[in-house]
Structure formats: structure tokens, C-alpha cells
Image (cartoon, rainbow, N blue to C red):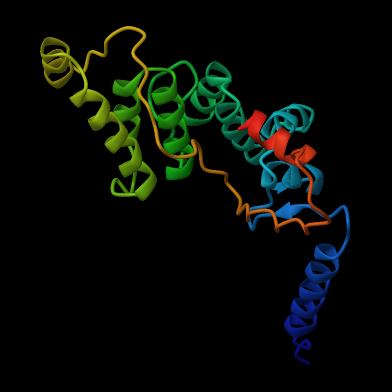
Length: 212
């Protein structure tokens, strides 16, 4: 006798479980690969409270999703050395400068961004050269920032950069985009209802302005 087809029931139970989890107040923001982010941390990131998100992420088990989120939050709070260390460990084979075969483009773009903010544009370009999609919009933003920066160098510095990719010491590369890509979708916070008119800024506005 053939076995009954249990696939529809299994699928139905999976859908029901997912819907139920989404309506739990403490549910996590979950990717299909199993990475998860506690709802409290997700909300800190969504509201732009990156300093508190950094603190929270450091207390979580160090899986890849948590580490990438921590690296992005570190960049957005000016902790560039920490971000470089995080993304170097995730992107490179241990003890080498060879990019891991399983390092995806989001991870490599984050590593390149961290190097750029660390005043290492040559390193950023090297990492971008490892992308599977070299025309990714985020990669184009990084290259554009480096091109603008290079055009502002003196003639000899610009020539040295063009020929040898040697950057001047302590020369910051300005960017005009929010650094880092989170590995999960982070929609913007919904607008707060206006309860009344006040000349003082909201507490959350102060937090966001300080931490970004």
C-alpha cells in the first residue's frame, strides 16, 4: 500500500508556524538561511540607534548574521578598526590575504567599505575586484567616492595613486552614502504620530542624530 502524501500538511504547518512567529512580540527577524536577529536589536538598527545595537550585538552568539550586523553598526558609529577586523575575519581565509570562496558580495562590499573608511582605498579596490557582480550599485558608489577623492589630490600624489595605488597618509576619502549593507532587510521605522508641538527635539531624534 502506498504511503499517504504528507507534503500538503507539512507545508501547511510550516506556514502556520511562520505566521504565528511573526505575530509574537519577541519574535526574531529571520532569514531563510537560519540567521536570526532578536527583535529588540532589529528595532535598534531600524531606528538608527547603532551604538546600542553594537552593545547588544556583542552579547549575542557570534554567528555570521550577528557579526555582519555588528560590523555595519561599528562603521556607522565610527568604530572603523573594529569593523575592519570583523570583516577581515569573515572574508579571508585564516592567516592569509586570500578571499574565502564562500564570501558573498554583501560581505565583500562591507569589507571594502570598512577599508575605505580606514583610509585604505587601494585595499577597498582590491576587495571589490573579487566581487561576483562587479557592477553592483554599492560597489559603484565606493569606486565613485575613490574617483572623486583621487581627483582632489595634488598632481604627484594623483600620479602615484594612478600608477602604484599608493594613497597619501592620513588622507580621508569622503563618502556620500550610509556605509555598510545589513544582511537582512531593515525597513525604515514608521513615522511617529505627532502628539503636540514642542520646541525640544524628541529623545529618539537626539539618539539617532548622535549615533549615526
